[in-house]
Image 1 (cartoon, rainbow, N blue to C red):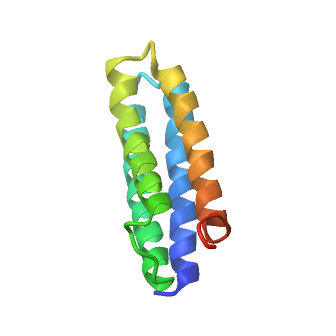
Image 2: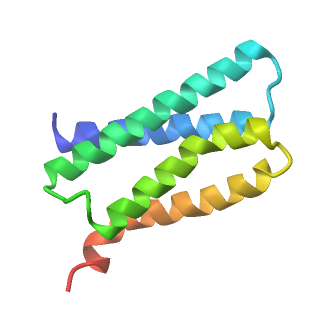
Length: 119
């Protein structure tokens, strides 16, 4: 697949993960709604991962680059947020705020990594 396809998959995944965050923040209690939110979140995470690694492969970027590893850690945090919000709803808003900031840093690194890490 082309770089552009991977980029679109990555962005669609980010949209789905964001939808999941927003829906969790509103705290849907109905089992059907919670399942839909979890599915959107999981599918979004998969698309983010697929698109990210696809773009890295197309650009011949090593997955051991520090900025790529940071983005993977952020991805893991985004993935674990659903479990945190279910088990500890009282701290979920604080964790969500931290993850939003980390996601913004990850986006910045994804866009400007070539300027930051090349001499």
